[in-house]
Structure formats: C-alpha cells, structure tokens
Amino acid sequence: MRASQAVLLRRIRRLTVLLAVAGVAYLVMRFDIVGLPEDRCCPLTRFEPGDRLIVDGSPTTLSPADAVLVRTADGSLHLTRISAVRSKDGAIWCETDAPDCPGLSSEDVGWIDPRAVDGRVLMSWEF
Image (cartoon, rainbow, N blue to C red):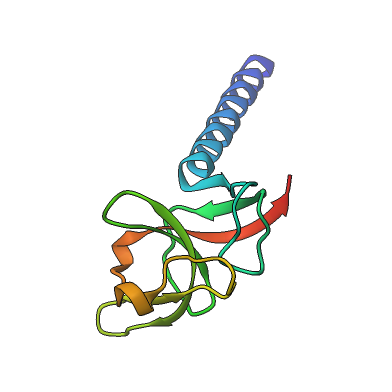
C-alpha cells in the first residue's frame, strides 16, 4: 500500500509542476513588458519617460480611456489613448493628451482598425 501511495504522490507532483510550467508559459506569451524611451516625451500624461508598461498582447475588449500600443503600416509602435470605439466594426478613435508631445492621433489618420492594436496597457511603474 505504501508503494502505491508513493507512486500516486510522485504523479501528483509531476502534474503540479507541469501545470505550473504551462501557466508560466501562458503568461510569458500573453503579456509583455515594454519600456518607454527615457530621452523622449510621452504622448500620454499618465505615463513618464522611462516607465515600464505591462501590456496585454491579446486584449479581448477595448474601451474608451484604455491606453494602447498601435502599430502603424510602416511598422512603428505608438502609445495612444482610445477615446471612442465604433460599434459596427470595433474600429477605434485615438488621441494623445500631452500637448507638448506629438503622437498618433485619429484626427490625422482617422479610425484605426482594431487589428492594428499591438496591446493594451494594464499597468505601469518606474523601474
């Protein structure tokens, strides 16, 4: 009976380790840490140059006031804030709120396809 208990415990430990590794792999694949350049201004006043952002790379919903990273056709990445979401196709209207720092604005480019969103900012901190 003791041998069967030891085998069962060993299997439970292996399963626990496997689940923990799978959980960590999921977190690494879904979330990313992005650093804002220290030598440039930030287009959103809630963030400072040099901040580190935790970004959800697969956001399920986008809402007004969300800070997002948008990848433009030329491949560059822009930090901006959603001010409206169009209900028929999910396109977003973005703007910046730092008057001294230019950024991607829908006033210049129009509605932005939601597939251009590279991620939604969940949290920031100074590193």
